[in-house]
Amino acid sequence: MRTSPYYITTPIYYVNDSPHIGHAYTSLACDVVARFNRLDGRNVLFLTGTDEHGQKVEKSAAADGRPPKEFVDEVSGRFRDLTKLMNFSNDDFIRTTEARHIRSCQELWRRIAANKSPAGRENIYLDTYGGWYSVRDEAFYAESELVKDDNGVQVAPSGAPVEWVEEPSYFFRLGDWRDRLLEYYGAPGSNTVSPESRRNEVISFVEGELFDLSISRTSFNWGVPVPDDDAHIMYVWLDALTNYITAAGFPDEDSETYKTFWPADLHMVGKDILRFHTVYWPAFLMAAGLEPPKRVFAHGWWTNEGEKISKSLGNVIEPADIVARYGLDQVRYFLLREVPFGNDGDFSHRAMIGRINSELANDFGNLAQRVLSMINKNCGGKIPEPGALLEADEALLAAAHGLLGPVRTELAENHAFHEALSDIWVFVRLANGYVAGQEPWAHKKSDPERMATVLYVAAEAIRHLALLTQPFMPDSCAKMLDQLGVPADARDFSFFGPQGALAPGVELPPPSPVFPRFVDDEAED
Ligand code: MSP
Image (cartoon, rainbow, N blue to C red; front, side):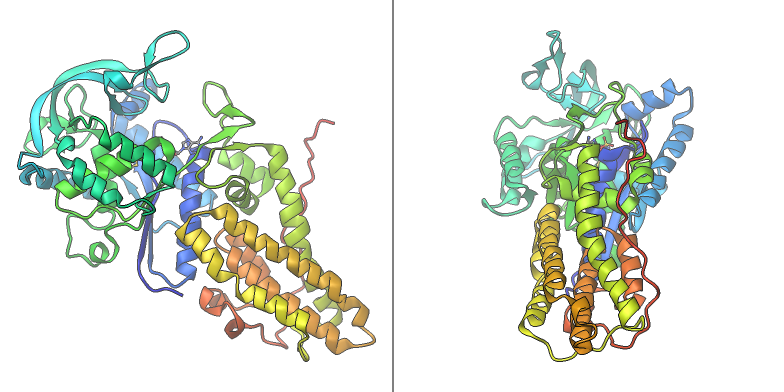
């Protein structure tokens, strides 16, 4: 168990469109880390929300024929609904159109402007921006960064269209912060920016030509007004990134929340928004005299059956559809088990069904169902009283007790969800092997005490599995723990190990399968 507080954030989502699987993915990863840390005794603040300003959102509202505020209220609601659909345990949901956030942005701006850069210059100065802008990425690009698409047209490196923009703008002296940024990234192996390949990518960007950054716009007005100059609104990324300190209570730095949670322990992001979080954001914070986040982790992207996911290709995966089809916890498990976190991955129905049937229904589900049914039939529906333990029993229990340490490292430190799950499943198979090898059913008449011991040890194995997989599959594990008679207040990790052992004699409800097999009604053949 740990006690230190823990602050984790998702990116805030653009409200130009409905949520899809990519959005659910970033938040799911955070939810699992947040739940794990809570179970591990930490005081967690888990933040998500919506990014509601900027040209992209303004254009979407106009295309929908509605005033921006009315439009963002509705679309933001869909992201809030997603948190319920996916059973995310966020403690706060921030919207950048809220008064608390506008106040926080303006104060951050004032502080940056009031301080000098490391070169002793004004951090913010007024000039004219003449350059490329991509509304889709909400990003400025240098000419040298542009690439040609298949038709020979200049586009952003992401493939997004760019337009030439020329307007008065405030600039942030990003170039002056280079050395401080490099210092922040630390020595190789430090995990301020993870995975390592992303860290290298960021360092080479910062070591290159670091242009000053345009941080205000004048050609439209859907944004936070720049303090003392209403003709400008803040660049949407400066506005959006600030959400992380707004929710921590900024500018009230004396508040308990701020003192407890800032700097954030982890900003989880997709690889596409790495630069904003690891270059611009820490530079803004340092310029304002605030601490930068402890860590930024960038994950990969999902494709759908090998194709890039996009509205125009019509292959967007709606979280509600797959949850309705496969079950919520099944989807949560699949997304974090299928692909090494950090890599790109491909969504396929076949892979989803494969994992549901083999790993959830066969391996884990059957283990629980077999053991609980035997207890129900042969032990009067009560947790059996174990007799003397044999070597095989001791070995299985020791393996169960030893799981928390490695899973904590993989999940809470390295965010290698796939490895945590794969380790847990090694134990699922071990437990299945134990039950098959010890044949509790064969001792029913000849040695009921041995049967009771084996079923008790197997039930303990299931308890540990259910405790440990709660962050991934909260509802299913709750059901399993109910069926084991584990009280609701005995499910955190302080009960992991012998100190939380099942109490013999506790009456159990009749067992019912937690992970059914997926039968494909829609299969064409
Ligand atoms: N509004 C900005 C973030 C501001 S944070 C201060 C933004 N929003 S977004 O809605 O476009 O994307 C949010 C997250 O969804 C990003 O982390 C992005 O990587 C993730 N995904 C969007 N599509 C995705 C996939 N196809 N696969 C995995 N994640 C993807 O960027």
